[in-house]
Length: 155
Image (tube, rainbow, N blue to C red; front, side, top):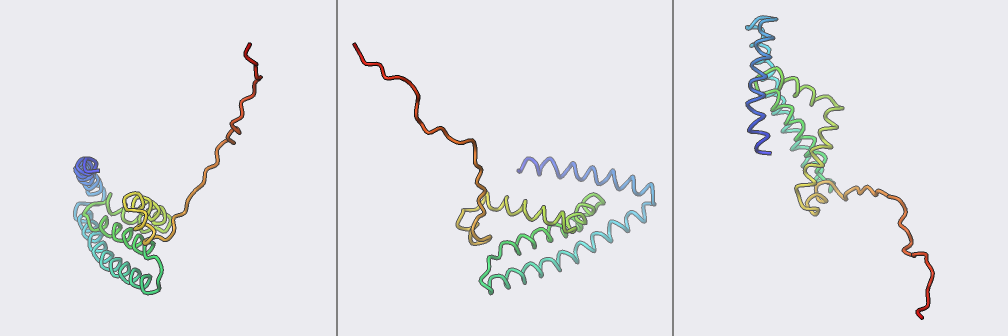
């Protein structure tokens, strides 16, 4: 995971610069800079809103005696969208906007939940998300263990 981040951050930075230059040559560098700054401002507002929403959802679920994991994960996905919008650049802004769309948000929530369940103990996962949903895969029927043959008496 650390290597992926160490390799990914410089690649994203280079890609953002290339896209900024392309967009700047297309619409003008002033407009491109204004668009990046506007997206960052929207991202900061979204971070604040999603953070407060996530906290309120967590407290409401905890007070109601429900498992707070779903609301926490929804907040994490919203905060991730806000962070992506806050990072200057067109690619990260588009990724943040995509993450705000309900279908992408749903996929991201499931991914974050699976990632979390793999990394915490089953007791913690149960407290966060409730009883685990187990998928039972039935394979081909097992033979009954009997081997056909003849008994030969020794001479």
